[in-house]
Image (cartoon, rainbow over all chains, first blue to last red; front, top):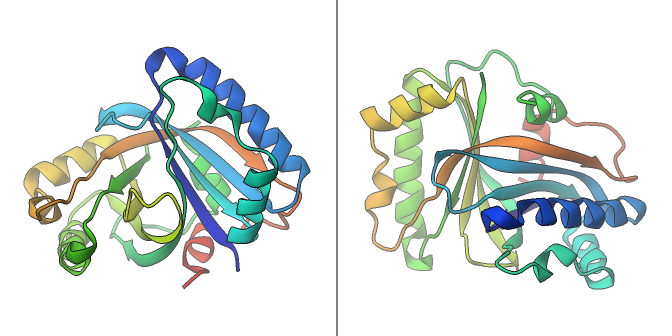
Length: 115
Length: 115
């Protein structure tokens, strides 16, 4: 069963560049392997709570594939001082649509629209 | 500009039902107002880090609309003992696709597939 992986990161401001460099290297490894379908890294814009600098929303072919990939290649971003990740598999419990909804945009379009 | 709102919740296990009841009531209020496009509440499955019981992935017409709605109706789920939210507006920084990707499923389909 496909699995949604959400990873919430605490990253000190002066470690952001190092974090991004390591996250991209980790992603490149997972891109070459089995299991990763897509990953969308988001950065906190500073509007609202600032506890978490980055959140990754990803899709894997299964929770087991996600576990295996991380056992084979432990992400190096966790080795950076002050970086704390909270990776876990989540399942949907409620979907709400407001009156402002015109149409459901494809995921890729939505997640990249603000670029 | 459309805004992606991510809200990461700490919810004590014995408060989950109360949290869900309040979250749904809050969502119903926002559904009636302006600004909310869609909200997708996710529950931690217990695979991985268990710090955060729920994460909401939502889309609003703008960060300002999100702020205004919350000023007019402060979500009651924050009044529950032990519940801590971390709502903030995020922007995409990286999109990665693995070899397992066959096609980009519409957001709605992806987010509700595990149901």
